[in-house]
Image (cartoon, rainbow, N blue to C red):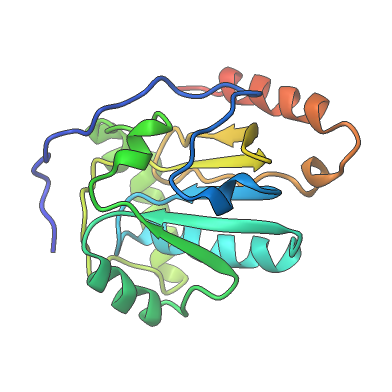
Amino acid sequence: MILLLKPREQIIAPAPRLGDVIELPDPAFSRGRVLLVFVRHTGCPFAERDIKESRRWAAEHPDARVVVVTHGDINVRNRWLDLIGGGDGLALYHDSDRHFYGQIGLGYSNGWHFMGPQSLMGVVKLWFRGIFNRMASGTRWQRAGVFFLQDGVLQWSNTPQSADDFILPPASLLATEGLATKALTSEQENHNAPG
């Protein structure tokens, strides 16, 4: 169980922009198409949803590698993953000190991010789908994010405006032709998003 106390925040780099080369902790992440999914914390209902959506996306896009980044206690994470159906189709990267989160510009949210009306309604909707808090580890304040890379270069990203907000890249983005144009469109949508 985790409380609402804020641990010391990690060092946060500026958010990467499209076309930036992302320095990755594992060289294997730098080759081909890689989707990085940073989850809030182990046991979070939104993290469970994100894992399940990432598994589905990985099955639909076998040419891309899906890397799920977690923090907290790795043993708790592993038991939690078993409870929610495992990590089939996913590569798991555990970032216990949240250095990778900070390196890619993901720091702490404010309380509104996970206790605001949209997020609270999201918790209720997930509960009806059998998704709820269980085996929590890590910090509730950590932001999530999704980043799509081609050979280590950022092509698309989404940093949720609330814990309930989660977007994976559209299938059209994976088309080889027009990748840069589609990425720019996604960036404009992200920058124009409310919040």
